[in-house]
Length: 101
Image (cartoon, rainbow, N blue to C red; front, side, top):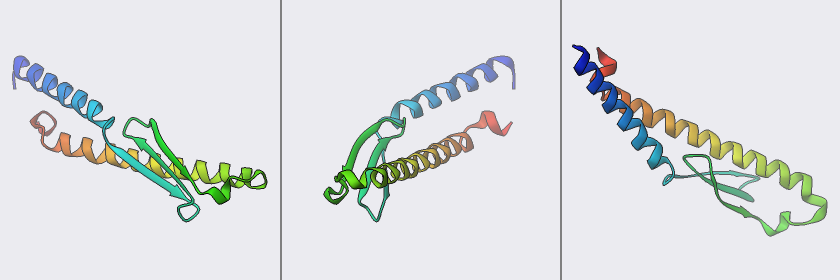
């Protein structure tokens, strides 16, 4: 592979990575905790899109429990995001001749 081919392959990979980054904003991922009493939706960029709380958790004496459940749900959603990014990146790289050579 000569220098020009190498440059073209690198540019192609760069474009694919940019496309993946842009598409992440459109992919919703969810996490929940407390048997679904807290549900969080983020996008592939990690931005919070929605949070759903069970009304039974909206009491002053349950504030600490609610905080714990929100953190657990967000953690689950973030793990789902990281797994999705890993899967999408792997698929993209497996189809790229640049990596194989």
